[in-house]
Image (cartoon, rainbow, N blue to C red; front, side, top):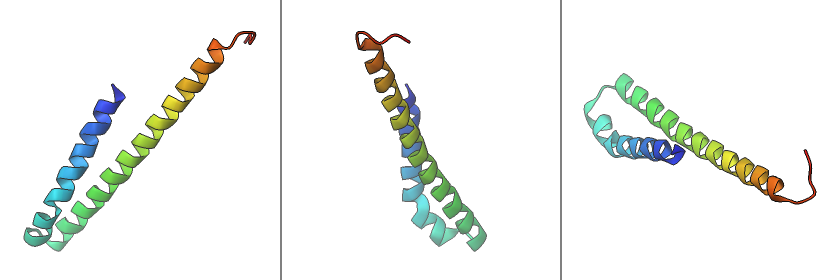
Length: 74
């Protein structure tokens, strides 16, 4: 279920990147700078969330692997 949110945020980042040339042509400098900051934060946020997702999956696999080993008692 977590991947659905990551995919939605990734689509948002792509849409923002596609609209960036329009913003550069038609908006003021301050709005363009704000747009670039929002785009950068969105891309960085998606990257961080992907990294967290991979770490959570690695921890889940590691804990599931340790639980399946015979002879290991907590």
